[in-house]
Amino acid sequence: MRTLIFLILLTTLLASTLLAKENTKVVTLEKGDLSVAVQVNGKLFTNYVYADPKRIKPILYPVIGPNGVPMTRSYPIEEAAPGEAKDHPHHASLWYTHGEVNGISFWHVGKNTGKIVHEKFLKLEDNLILTRNKWMGPKGKIICRDERTLTFSAEGADRAIDVSIKLIADNGDVVFGDTKEGSMGIRSNPVLRLKGEVAKGKAINNEGIGGKAIWGKRAAWVSYWAPFEESVTGFSIFDHPTNLRHPTWWHARDYGLVAANPFGIHNFERKPKGTGDLKILDGSDITFRYRFLFHEGDAKAAKIAERYDKWSQKK
Image (cartoon, rainbow, N blue to C red; front, side):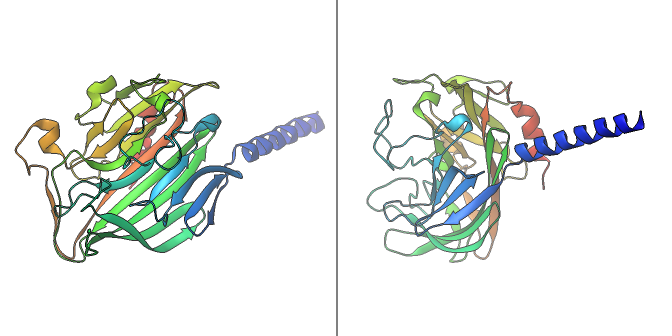
């Protein structure tokens, strides 16, 4: 009898070990001349594109979600996929920047705009990328710098990117101006749009506001999803409680742009221009933290509220 019980326990232990091994997601980084490939169990999750001369800022592209679904649009990095609009060439996959920094737009592409240039890797190991970047005006003057930490993880089919952006005023005072054109953004796969040729998307925020009404509202998180061939797939963006002016406002358009923006109060709430200005004094810095979660199911099925609560408690 003891032998039988021992064999049952051993079999259970082996089965649990094999299941745990199967569910363990190994994240690896491979640095190239222009980008760092981020893989999960040998399959591409995303590329951190840090030195593409055609880009005015570092971006993440492509971003592959559950069941191999591309989470961002192809344009302008590649030719537009079916159903994609060839608009807003500055909406390049997934990025951080802002539309008014000491009066210069780092959001747009064109004459007299700024660019964010990779300076160096501070850390590149395991599942973490830490870089330093300089924000340069159209005449080459350094306006400020940032240090950004990207941490990649996986749970089952779901994938996550934790982003920490430290804005550093190391070349004089810096004002992040009051404009809707910012800041932590993504331009989604067109199927996830709320309107358009192939759009099937739906959206909600933690306040229960849905659809295009999310634009300009404050919320701790927003969630988007749509049916694809394999299953319903979506993405959610979390704003950390330690962030300035949490819960943030959302520059979330029905054509696929979704951006957390704590600066654009003038546009979002029709208050006097400058209400949302943030001055970072010379020698000072400020940090913002976000999570992008790419998940199976809609906001309810993916338990976004519960997952946000757990993530938000991290210091």
